[in-house]
Image 1 (cartoon, rainbow, N blue to C red):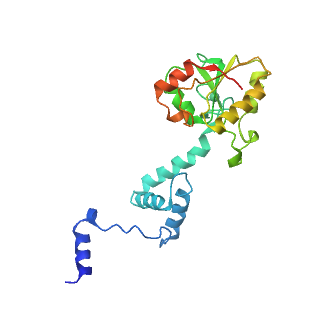
Image 2: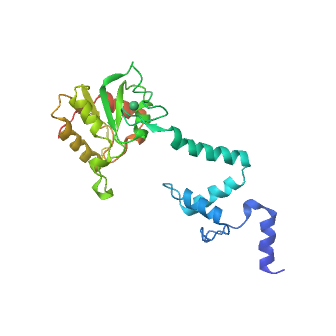
Image 3: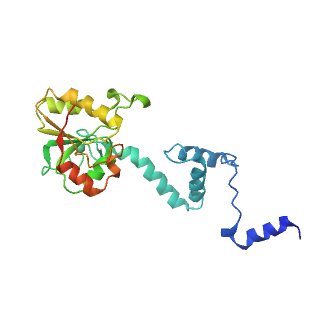
Length: 227
Ligand SMILES: [Zn+2]
């Protein structure tokens, strides 16, 4: 028996022991529909071509009802999910549940980069104010300037005297500090007190990855922002 046949025999004996051919070309796909699906999946952050192909091949094994549900859920994202007109948080209604909650302190506004930070701070269960979601931070390297962010409604709110305090809760990175300073310059003419998280959050780390106790303390022990 030659060696080739021995390898084939082992393959068929156990699928889990089959050789892994890792050097295949993930775009050498014999179906343009699969190829297109792989293109779409691999356009998502953190998904390479090989992972995309694995996901698509998994979907191919599902029954038609499951696939239809999968497609519906994706389509409904754009149809039903919107940004809260007041704070920029994601919401299924024009105003999000946090802004619509009259028990929250609407004169205390926590400024965050994106909705994952809202979720992280909400999970501490200790913050009773509302939020303002910028939708990013100023990053000249990535071509993101102040005009690309949801800033003006916050400035308008503060200038109109609708807030007592804003908490700058951006990640302690160079981009976060740049954004903090920009907001400080925009808002210091108003009577709003500007505070920032106490630095229990390690420099260079991201808010959403802080543990709940550190994050909770950082909000409670916030300090005046110093330009
Ligand atoms: Zn809102």
